[in-house]
Image (cartoon, rainbow, N blue to C red; front, side, top):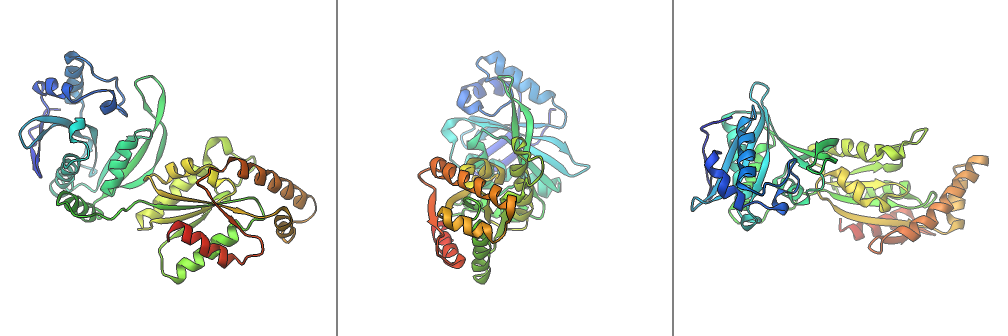
Length: 362
């Protein structure tokens, strides 16, 4: 789609992408730059000419060449999937020369693009989709203040033929003023608060007191008027037959946290038996490179058995004891060295919760 839209400001200029931009764009591009794209890395002039031609041929896409203050081509970006009738679009197909990574270029481009989208076109939603393995782009979108919406499985076809997941983020019209202010502050060199999720994982064997300590954490934070949410992780896939191999727990956590985060929550407590072994999976489900504190609650066999006996009976008790003992061995063997161990034997839940919160820095 050829267009005549030009966006300028904050040391960059976005001009309509044209065939003549192919040669300078090729000098900006290598395998690292192209990581996360769905097409092979362009290596020749003809390859990049095809990339530009594909961009221009795509309906609903407004491709740009990104110029620096000296007029040099330093990358490309696009509006795409534009539907002004419905009031939505996506920003993507973005890459920059490594020389401008970490500079003003990306926040300046995002400020220009979203200002036009929200304030000129009056859209209601701007979305971003990122390959789940593209950690640099995930970090950049998160830093914008975009809200994570979830993980679309098998959504992307990678250049090697494998399928991958897309992580979705968005900014809505009523969220735009805060995002705009963050971008302006960054471009002005002002400190911008880290808005990522703080994720506290409480793991441990059955009978260790995860739910009780989680409730005590909730009470302490509530007493201090600290905004937070607590999720009982073991209930996220409590079903028969248990759907562990389908990742239901992580998917459900992503859905739950997306709603909390949209309401302004940034602290999340998740209690589940093996949470400390699945920190990477749960962090990915949260979706914004969260600060993670993993705490393994421990208890002796006698303590765990006594606690289980107060709530289970007969064959159910025997089964829970067996699972608890097996989990204790596994957790101690597999929990990483950076997982905090907190003993619960002979301690009040409030005392354990206070220690956990100190470890989390909350």
